[in-house]
Length: 97
Image (cartoon, rainbow, N blue to C red):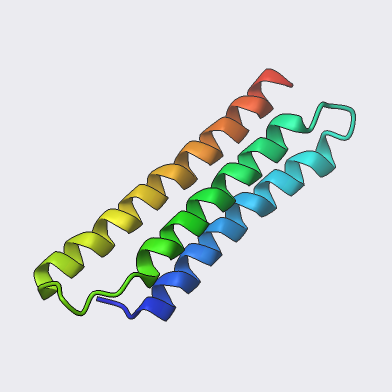
């Protein structure tokens, strides 16, 4: 298992990917309403902050197998949130085409 710092870097990288895709959409579609894009960005940031809160909780009293399961769940939940955000952005692109 990666350490907490690497896990946070990975989550930040994935957050940056989602946000950069949103900003590219805004740049390309200057004449469209950007409120939904702002909501997508806010959602991914909320999920990232929530994941960081879970990662920062102490694990000293937990068995290593349970710690691994906890971090796996955090990663999977965040991946689902990022995928959902990208799907919403994709849907916006399709609707505006």
